Image 1 (cartoon, rainbow, N blue to C red):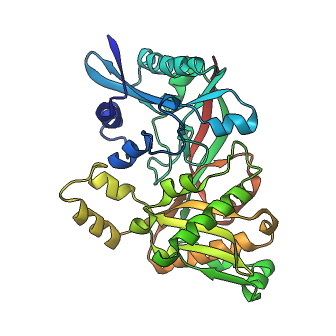
Image 2 (spheres, one colour; image 1 turned 30 degrees about the vertical axis):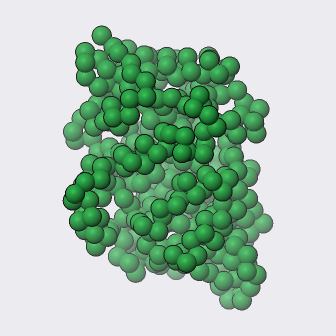
Image 3 (spheres, helix red, strand yellow; image 1 turned 120 degrees about the vertical axis):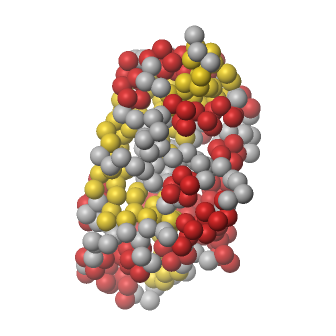
Length: 367
């Protein structure tokens, strides 16, 4: 017997711990962060009716979960009539998958939508996609992760794959940052009109606005991208100073104006694994231990104004970050998703000798 509970946060959070095998290396978001995202504190939601989430129980045991939501800004910008699902996790059971996806489809129809698509946790600028092939059986902060059978369950439920993506990992120890410097990069580094600064506690507000402006400008022609508001960037990044390594981020300025931002943070997954993604009495000790033994990092924001793209600035910023990561003793870093249509970003990954970690797609269905 399958039972579905709506907006039962405790069971929703517990789901991946219950449905995946103990040896599957899934690491959850911090519990308090997930609760914040699934509330009206999240500026992506305009009203309580814009989202819901469900937990499936089979024979009284937690068996799966799904978030369903409307992102009005995407529909308005692109003329879509979509609803979205996310955080889709379940046991390898097609009946459980059907029951959860039926809730997402019902939600979409109740909002007058003609298509449901996911995973979107919560929009295209956060964690998206469904794993279709695992090359490296682990994941970094801000990477989605699930067993390959989730994609197969979606297909059995009538969903089709679209928008293929990959994630990458770079071996920092083996990489020589000097290989990133060609004539264009060296010219930029010698040009006094360009200045570069690190993220500091006294310039956080400036950095967050620079991030927003650079992302909105640099990503404006990317598929599905919707400009971020000040409220959205603050909601996502306001706690960054607690976790950031100040040496591994860079803001590029041209004549005093920020034209590029690259934010690389320590990979939080080892810390989250140690505390089971929950705050507790030992959390401060684990956090200090994590700070003393950081070996991996994640690039979470990386964008350059359009008119500065293909001019060598990307290479200069990557040189700065790769050099800092090596100095700080990091061994590797992971990146968030890249669309297979984004040839420029794929070339950047190739220059870094990056290896593919995961293959992903979105899965959609007409309703």
